[in-house]
Amino acid sequence: MSGQQRELEFRFLAEPTDVNYGGKVHGGAVMKWIDQAGYAAAVGWSGKYSVTVAVGGIRFVAPVRISDLVTVSTKLVHTGTSSMHFSVDVRARDPMQEATQDRLCTHCVIVFVALDHVEGKPTPVPPWTPLDDEDHRLAEYAQRVMELSKGIEQTIARYRVDS
Image 1 (cartoon, rainbow, N blue to C red):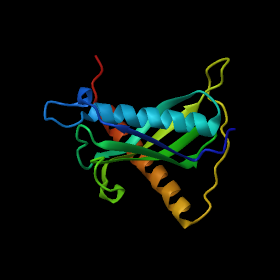
Image 2: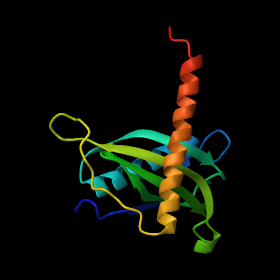
Image 3: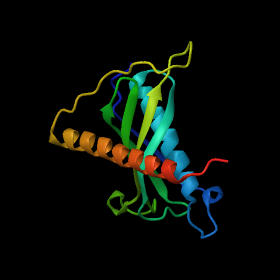
Image 4: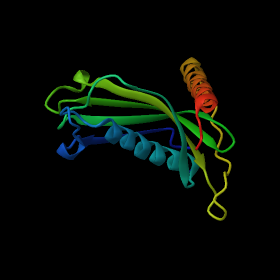
């Protein structure tokens, strides 16, 4: 049922196939996990096929090590007419350690747009309204991150030379 699933968690072990040349999990693998969890969260909220339109403020804070227990947590923090903004945290820990030993590895805001099945055009999503101070803070944060990202895009466009 759409409009009900505000939060979603993926949990799995980081595998040797995810390793980069430095022996840690490749940033691209982490970004794939973020996109997959975001997609599941967007479909869970909207009840419709959804596509990624933006990722903002991505920060790689600490490495994910091979065999770490990884948790990718998504939380809906803003909706537009057809868009859904999710705050995403990627945390990891040695699975033989207590859950209190996990560390924040990556954080970002990811935005999805729901599409209709007939024409593939944006379609309305159930609205979400902040309920408390924390919700208002997260909604403001998500909107600010995306404003900053738009500013970066505009700066790049001014300096990019198209061939």
